[in-house]
Image (cartoon, rainbow, N blue to C red; front, side, top):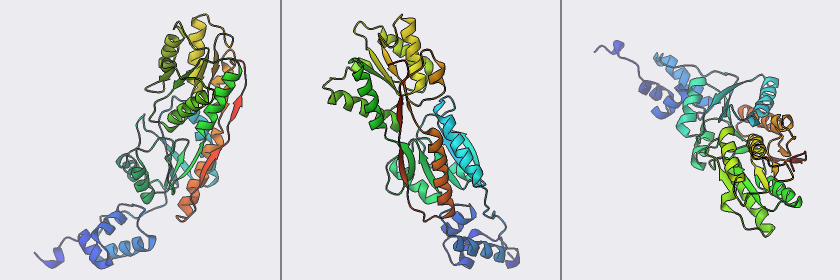
Length: 330
């Protein structure tokens, strides 16, 4: 074969740039774990040897936001906060609904490559510490609400254990000593931690938990919460207090109680979580825990943009304050 007609390959680029083939591959596929100086050297080498099968890395001004589902009203104000922070920094958020499963490295990496985003905010749980560590090596990432403890991982969230203990203690203070828990899927940090806080509060009060009072729903569902609450409140030894880890679950429990001709809060006190709009639309208005969702989203986006602009920026781990909003259901 005539040497002039030889097809130029990635190996020729690596030889010209004096780097490994793997480094060239990462650079030409727009992966962010290649230094800018190395990337420039590789692009210059590719042009020099006539290798045309590459894309120039570009600034997309896009931020990827990974969200489990769009049915849970808890997420809407978080997205509002992210959107405002992104706009003020000349970025645009890109929302991707992931479904109810922990994030894997392959899943996130594929989306990042397809969208060319510059950073990631995840409201989903990441599948493992190792996965989180690998993702942070590839792209700036901030966890919001859901988070895995990692010394180098930034997140914005709340202290779910403390918040749950406050709820249970307030229910107990109203003379309700048979307290049920309507919980979400345990794959979520919030569900595990709120259950832990519930159990700790009962333990501190000297109350043995009743297994039939603890409901763990397989998915976020009003209908399932209503069915489970109806079943629980139909028991002969029914609970006289319910802590629901979501306002949606709490409103489902209210409907179940009403359908069974139980008075709220006289026969059963009910407390929700999140202080979403539904909590003041229901009758009676729902006692609930107010989370600073907007602030969580805003701060998570600001933290991410700091990382994008300066890869050496310090890790930030924020737990924001919550407030128990007393209304008419307790």
